[in-house]
Length: 82
Image (cartoon, rainbow, N blue to C red; front, side, top):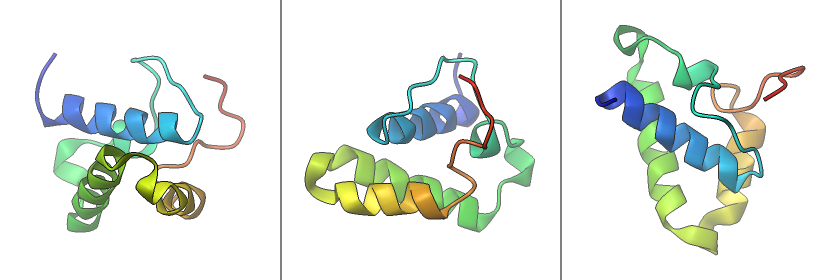
């Protein structure tokens, strides 16, 4: 497994784990399953931001939590059962 889609999925899963949501490798929705050709510049900027914040540890936890709560592209859908 390789490629940007694989990296994207891991970035989102890492971000979710910081929000106490742990997924299996095959679980996905939103930006995890979005087709590469359908990603917008805003989607890519969000992924870059999330990756940077995830690397910073607890220093930016409040921002990580705010992004999770406010952005549907990363938030677990209601009714989702991982």
